[in-house]
Every structure is written in C-alpha cells, then in structure tokens.
Amino acid sequence: MPTFTYQVRDRAGAYSAGSLVATNTDEASRMLRGEGYALVSLQESAAGAAGDIPGERPKRVKRDDVIFFASQLAVMVDTGVPLPEALDSIAEQCEHTGLRKMAEDLSSEVKKGTEFSTALGTYSDLFGNLFRALMKASEASGTMGQMLQRASEYMQQERDLRKKIKGAMTYPLVMLSFCILAVTALLVFVLPRFEKIYAGKDAILPLPTRILLGASNGLVTYWPGILGALVLAGIGLHFYRRSPAGRLALDKLRINIPVLGSMFRKAYLARSLRTLATMVSTGVGIIEGLEITADGAGNQLYKEMWLGVADGVRQGRSLSDVLFENKLMPGTVSQMILAGERTGRLSTVMNRVAVFCENDLAVAVKTMTNMIEPVMIVIMGLIVGGIAMALLLPIFTISRVVAT
Image (cartoon, rainbow, N blue to C red; front, side):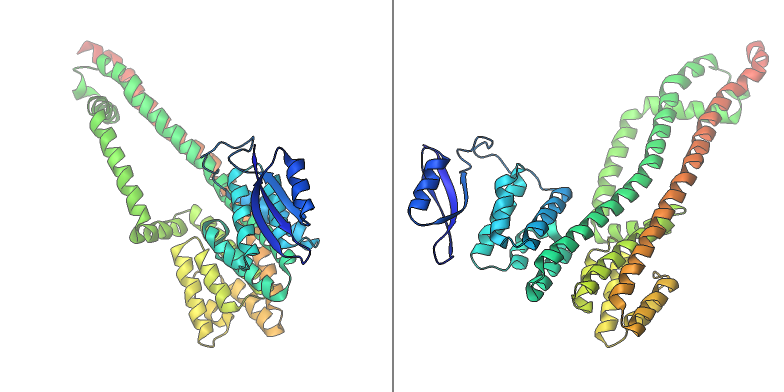
C-alpha cells in the first residue's frame, strides 16, 4: 500500500507532521480525523507519487519560478492564510518538483519555529539579501503580505530590466556573428577558387587582393592551429573573467565602451536606485539598505560606490552629500535625493527617482537599438563589399593578367 505524508493540527492548534500507510487518500484522511486531528495537508509520498520518479533530482528553480512563488504566497498571506498553511498549499498544487521541494523545506522550518527570513537563508542564491531583508522587516512590523507583494513587484521589475538589456544586445550580437560567419565562408570556400585563377600573377595583383588571398590560404592551411588557439583563448578569457581582476576589467569596459557604455551606466544606476528605493520605503535601515544595494549592483565599480556611500552615512554624513562627490552618480539624481532629505520625504522621492532612471534607461535602449541597426548594416556592407571589390579589382585589368 502507498505511504502518505500528512500535516495536521490538534485541538489546541499545534502543528504536527508524519506519515502513514493507507489504501488511498480517503482512508488516510478518515484515519487522521478519527484521531481528532484537523487536516492541513495530505499527499502521497514521493516514493509512491504518480508524477515522481524515485531518486529523481528536483528541477532547477529559475528566477521566474521564484517570482511566481512570491506572488502566490503574497496573495495567500495577505488574505489571512497562515504562513505554514500557505506554503503547504503551494507545495501541494505545484507541479515543479524543485519549487515544491523548496516550499516543503520552508514550511518545515517555519513549523519548527524558525523565522521565515532565517529559513530563506537555505535558498539564499534564489532569494538574495534584499528579499530576506524585506521579510525580516515584515516580521517586525507584521506586514508580511504587503512586503511579499512589494518583493514580488521588485523582482518583476528587475526581470524586465534584464530583458531590456538582453534584448538591446541581442540584435548587434546576432549581426556580428552573421558577419563573422559570412567572412569566414568567403575566405574558406570562395577565395580559394580565385587563387587558382590568379596563380602566378601575384606581382601584378592589387594589394587588397593579395592580402585576402594570403588570409584565405593561411586559414585553409592552418585552420587546426587557429581553431585550437581560439579555443585556448576562450578558455583563458573565461577563467580571467571569473577572477577579481578580470571582473573589474570587464566592468570598467562595460561602462566606458562607446555607444553601449551610456546604456550600461543607466542600467546599473536604475537597478541600484530601485533596490535602494525598495529598502527605504519598507523601513529597512539606510545603512543596511545601502549594503544590500551594493551587493546587487551588478558592477564592481558601482558596488564600491555604494559601499563608500554606506561608510559615509555611517560616519554621520547625509546620503546626498556623499553622492554629490561620486562621479558615477549624476548630479540631477543627487539633487533630487537632497530635496527628499530636506522635505522628509526620502522614500517617496527615492521611488520617483527610480522610476525616472528606469524611464531614462528605456529611452536609452530604444535609441541605441535604433542607432545600432543601421550602423551594423553599414559595417557589414563595408566588410562584405570590400572583400567583393578586392576580388573584382583584378578583373578590371584581366587583359594584362592574361597577356602576361
């Protein structure tokens, strides 16, 4: 017979959990109610569940899954459902094995008396410091439902921001990849045919044609070595990227690269200010909020900036004074934050500044996308057209080539 896991409450309201063997769900339910328990959840154990395979690894939980979890939990808690029951309900209804296991683990910890914010530490890579800080603040203020909704909205905004950046970068990367493939195809398959036609005529061939033929010959002859060098370079770049010096170099490149640098700076700024605005408006301490903002900045330079701001505030200086001294922070943003401090409406102003920066980023992404499209077309045209012209130049003097 199958084994069922259950969670119940006794007449005093205390939670307990366990397992039992029964013919079916109805029989298991009758057995528990017959002992005077109020049923909270009852499900067939993983070993006998129809949809699970014994020993199967839970699916990987993605960012969208966490957003769904937070949104659903926010609605249930905000409508008065106790947190353990809400977590159990999500676990019962969820088909995603990884998300179900996460909900079950969190429910188990909460029922043991562990605070929800502490229990989330087991899945810190999924929820992050900001989510846990919001839950900690909600436990102190008794506003968990509202705070879960705020956290869910923040994660959705962060996801939309990432999609904007990825969407803006997709087109130029696709065009660049296509350009590289087109040039490689010309050098490997087309140019060798022309090399046979122009064999022995190197002295009178135009310089661009000789350069192209040499590049084609080198690529066809030494392609194993070239491929090996590219693979080794890629591996070296991968490990360099993961080193502190590599991450710093890449972060500097992102914010200083022509055309794209401005978009990246606005993206990091919008993300940081949205995080800080969420922290300030939910009652999290300003220093803790600045440190969490630094952790989620996404760029080492901006992380150092926010940590420096936190140090300045810790020494008794105002937030706006420290921001005015940093070159990465636009003066207009610092001025708006100063106005918020003077009027005592810092949380309201921070939210408006975050919206302002996100709108500014949206405009920058659209402008960059509209500008990159014709630029990439022109670059591709110049490269492919240049190769074609280099191949056709000798044809203009074909009579001289044939005569010699």
